[in-house]
Length: 206
Length: 206
DNA sequence: AATATTGGAGAGTGATACTCTCTAAAAGTC
DNA sequence: GACTTTTAGAGAGTATCACTCTCCAATATT
Image 1 (spheres, helix red, strand yellow):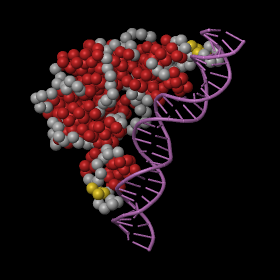
Image 2 (cartoon, helix red, strand yellow):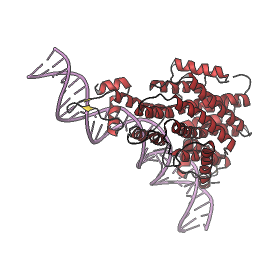
Image 3 (cartoon, each protein chain N blue to C red):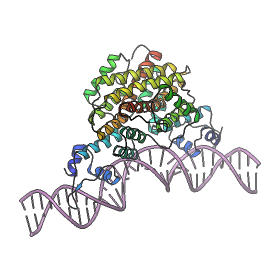
Image 4 (cartoon, each protein chain N blue to C red):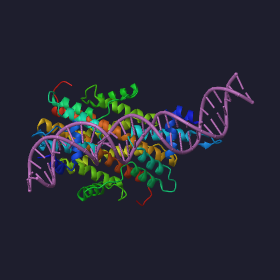
């Protein structure tokens, strides 16, 4: 298919597709002469993945680029790739207090989670805890454990639900579930918070 | 205190404080002569709230502005204000398929959650489900229920943990917990996903 | 009197994600 | 075979966001 058809199938303007090609987010099509290139199903899928991560997942193109680089990484163990793709989903320039890092490490150890010790998510979590403390809200251990157990239930179900497929597909699916499931979970949490606050603070009518 | 002191206490540059004043995110100080104004503890707290929402919560200034408008709304019932402040945390221009809206409504009904029927979170959730479907990943009812139950556990604990305080404080705390607790929950979920995928796909070493 | 700080307003900056314009080459149409 | 349309590729332009800088006259401080 030509670029116009790729644009039609994905609802992404031709100019934007060209921009993604230039930026290396989308592999070039198969050149047919100097001013023509053919695109295939792989391009459709890749383009949908990019748009999903950007629009629904709220990722920057820079972050999408890192994620795609990991998705395409073929030399490593699948589990390693999943970890790396995961890492690419979050900001890289984080600092967190030692106190919070210790709390995170203790939590991971207590739950017996198998996590790379250098996983950026550890630092990210410690940083998020710091942000709460900084604004005067202390996240106590009990609440943290409730978060962890809820997170665990969700994650186990998500990973169990991942369709079997080839390696590329599995990595893509994992990235998608992680990036797009987040908004789902957060929306449900806000709904549940509204319900809980209705019970705590609400008048009778709602 | 003068603006320099406000800047020192909050670690926000004077130029940025002036910008927030101009943008109406921060109320003006008490004018003392033509070129001097005094700021107080309320300004420090407001400024910390803004930075927490922007930096840790990842909100745009426009969204922060709507949230603050709701926080300052004094004429309404507390529970209503909480709902509105909640609504201000999410984008406003959403469209979702009828199919997903129905699934959301059914889920809310099944759980017996007390939610305003026009809550923007319903649409937001339906939209997030659509985004997953669009990319070829079907979120089945069982998984959706697991998300909902995990969200419920977290939300109940969060609301129960909210300190007693005056109305203004309660609204601020709710907004903070909602906005800053999100990253915490998502980070824990990613850690739990890594653990789950270690078990499903992992080699022995990690 | 000399120096420093402030409020206020406008202009400038850097990053991000496109979007538009242009050119020469090629493909399709009559 | 002339004419119209489409394409690849690259550069320039645009819109938004969140600051950040500069300047001024009016105070305060030393």
